Amino acid sequence: MVEKIFRTNPYLDSCEAKITSIKEGTLTLDQTVFFAFSGGQESDAGTINDFPVKEAIAEGSEIYYVLGDGTDLHKGDGVVVNIDAEKRRKIMRLHSAAHLVYGIFSEQTGLKKLIGSNITSDKARIDFENETSIGEKLPEVEKEANGLIEAALPIRTYQDEKHPDKWWWECGNWKFPCGGTHTKSLGEIGKIKLKRKNIGAGKERIEITLEKE
Ligand SMILES: [Zn+2]
Image (cartoon, rainbow, N blue to C red):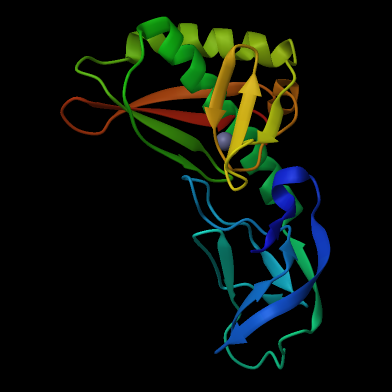
């Protein structure tokens, strides 16, 4: 299983690694800083030995990196993995923001069933099952979120004791299972904006964007 350095140190933008398998331009590594789409969080952008990663695929506990043809890499080769640091920082900020907004929203409205979430470097969205519009509640949720961001509450992420590939995000009284990449404080998120979208009968979406990119 690949060692996922992005979980222990999400701030690391580069690492050395060894190729543990390679087949038709797709390889696996012994360790990596490069996140692959899972849990609604988009993949990083980046390179392996300066070859652009076309796709990163998380499968079970493994990650497959698709480089395509013409790389001349072999099993056992040492490589350097680099990611787009700016993009990663935005994803980390929006990912922590998504947990925060979900936490506040559930507290203020009684828990609503989460039916999906998506985190990119542009915005985060969380989808709920809810019969009525949540539009009215958003300004209050936004205000509380920005207050806690200003208070810069610390965030703790840690490995599950029983399941090594399961991780937790914890802040204040909130604790959610998540293996994504997050900031280590709410303060790093900076001010956020919330927008409501109706995505069908009984379904509501909250969109989160960063006020300062
Ligand atoms: Zn998360």
